[in-house]
Length: 193
Image (tube, rainbow, N blue to C red):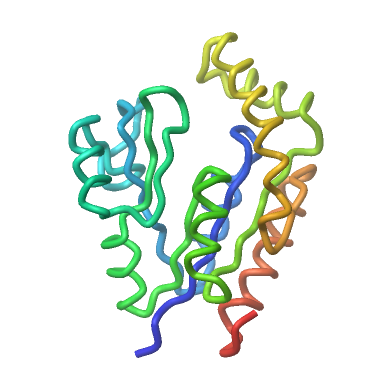
């Protein structure tokens, strides 16, 4: 059985990345979602092992010390996110194409690690103002958290050149179609992209 390929999605918070990834996972492309680990507490309706592998700070740091992460990052002070190597290899060895929904630093790191076995897609908001508006409408964060996310997003936009493709999510349906086309071409070709 051929090992699965890797499709990396990164974007500033509020760019629509998670919605686009969910759309893609509903398609028949032999995709499996790589569930990230995090040291943050679950949000309402989030399930352990499905949305994230929720770990205590101590558990997370022990896995870092044991070199169990493909990549990890302290995204916000005291809040870490990472991709467990065991999770990725388990899915690839089943022949699944692994989809990552990770922060931009993690996306660049995974792309560097896997090279041409991975397709790295950066989902970009039409503008920083639109990003702020989406975060406000989403209504999951306090105003000061939104401003922190917007400031972080401005920095994250500078990483887009480390990705293979940039998709601007201005109209969600169009962005979903564009991503689906890119991924179909990548997973259905036997050659490296």
